[in-house]
Figure 1: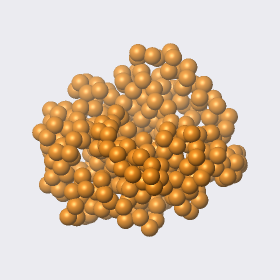
Figure 2 (figure 1 turned 90 degrees about the horizontal axis):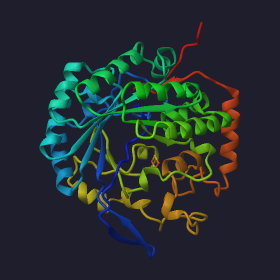
Figure 3 (figure 1 turned 120 degrees about the horizontal axis):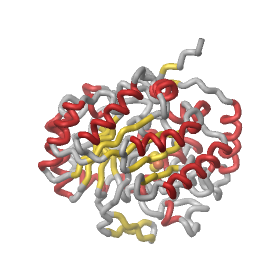
Figure 4 (figure 1 turned 120 degrees about the vertical axis):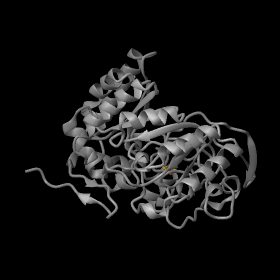
Length: 394
Ligand code: FES
């Protein structure tokens, strides 16, 4: 998925309580599920949230398997499906899948790079019942945007598809993934979202795991950039109230409090990979040593959500070490991000170093400051071969 940010919309917290080490855990079946239809994508964004080892086309769930999955999701009470990737429009059966989602009563959202869509296909998707389109952008103009996405003429195509989206009557969200090399374009990106008649803009600073971690030196913003961004976003949120909703994800390394990642592990969200693995988050496979059940196995999705080791491992608060365990915010941030704790400390059991209470917080703040000042700007583009280093500018 090129846009880095699985949409955590509203969730159905049908309260269920478990007991972990004497502590209550409340969770329900999530209202929304992220369906990664494929890891194939024409773009090569250096911060892609897909795993470094991507799943090949021959491993992908078939049309019939996705339809069976959607039947099951609808039966257990899931209400929304977010079709994502890779690029979901690579799948020739996308219209069929959207039509099936509509048939079983799921609200469907398409998270797309847009570059493979035509107006006719968008119309077919709208006719099949698609409810919403989310288009990722890499900058405010072609020079920066096409370089970041590693795809020539992509930006112009995205603008065209965004206009078609509104013409066929679908609501539009623009997802802008921000980092050191495009943050200077944020004011123009905000104007662009208004001009495109988007309902919502996600200003999502890159989160550093997977491909983004591999590219951290080229992406991490300076502290001064972050302070400026905070002001730009706050001013735009005020000025555009009622015109454009702006969601903002701050960069973790400079934060004081960790983010409530995925709304809490195994609490509000799950993800299905192209080959059918049921994951607590899009980056969960970066945590080595964890096993994930598949929709191709003999267990139901409901069973996997309620009982699998992967979903229960970091659910609730019982698993938490100190200082999380005695922290007054533990039921607010649920310990932050497990994938980031693993990436930065080698164990997902540890406190997320994005938290100021972590012993490592000062270190990651210092690392971000140093790396952003060194300005190593060349990307390692995402591809199935483990990445391609950007050619030097002549
Ligand atoms: Fe996996 Fe945060 S991305 S828990």
